[in-house]
Length: 255
Ligand code: BG6
Image 1 (cartoon, rainbow, N blue to C red):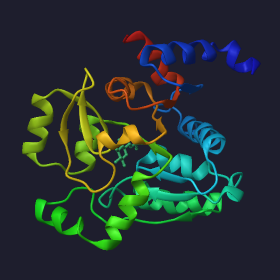
Image 2: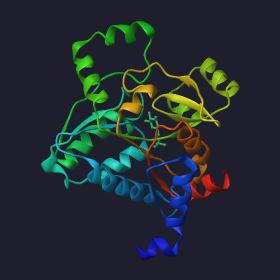
Image 3: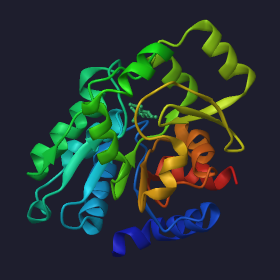
Image 4: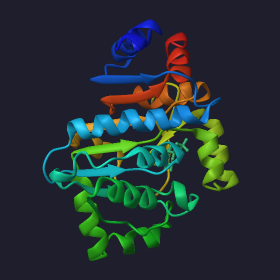
């Protein structure tokens, strides 16, 4: 596309691909920190990516967040013949309803004319609740679907923004400060070197299970999120990144 060449986006995409060893990078123009529609454009690009990659009866797992909500809004029914099944990547009650993984999952399925299954569990569980829930047949069933998904689409958050959104305790905040957490994804917190320094006890996809999923697609943008994005990309689980120019330019500067 000539416009992308003109703005040098193609070049930025290639640089990011090399920097983080990714299969594919899509950078949309603008900075979603400043302009709300940029998030929608990331959503549109992500939908294109999903439609290109899903196959018959594939399972698509999604996390929560405002970025994923924008993906759901842009979802279309281009792949409806393939009968996709949408599942939340993990429990997520606690976020605002419209940003919860369940809500996003149901909305995507509705827009894509596919099916969905939900996981009605809090984001963070006590140890007792965790052990009990893991024995629930309905939970086990959805967990198996999640683990066999062929594509997972997830957001990346700034560590302290996420800790506040989750109403983390002062001990948890202390741990995050001491460990110099900068990013968050899937309930795990990461430092600048991409090491996971803290995790929320949650039911759903665990970090070490991501390697079994063919496509791990991260959608995150805004120049303020660059460090957070880098922290998770360094972990090496992501193979496709959809971001915006604001984050992309910071990521390249920071290298
Ligand atoms: C949350 C996910 O719902 O959204 C997090 O649980 C993710 O893992 C976050 O980091 C991203 O939110 P946003 O609003 O910045 O897209």
